[in-house]
Image (tube, rainbow, N blue to C red; front, side):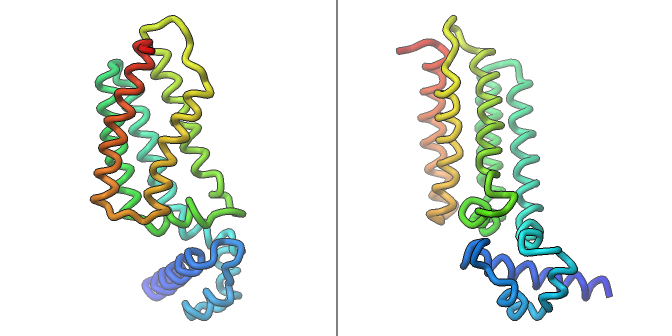
Length: 201
């Protein structure tokens, strides 16, 4: 019985993912999901309460997994006590995040492109806020100049950093192309941040 229930739930979530990807959250139809999965709309309401609950069930495992991975990477960099080590942890974290996103690619397309109206519509902003907090600590800890680096500059740079990931996902780049792009971006950003913390103008 449990295996049968698990199979039904898996089929339902797969149908929901396809529907949300095609129509977005607002225009997705529980009736179409029901017809495609063979699960009654009443059963969907019983299991997930509403359409938002179903969307959450589709994306939550991968969204939570990425957030945990990212927080672990950021914490390791922040606790390294050395700018070069922090940079290295940052590179490793970027590689892990990219691999994870490609292992759950459709889910992150949902989060980045189709989540308006759900609790995940601000997920991107949450990632940016975490990165801002880390880079504020990084700059304060390792800057060799007396002047404080502008908070809005940090905000813009961190927003841009996650925007690269957003563009990769929305343009559906092949993984090898995404890896190559991020390697260029890492080289570019490392030189820029070093100039900032060393006070180079």
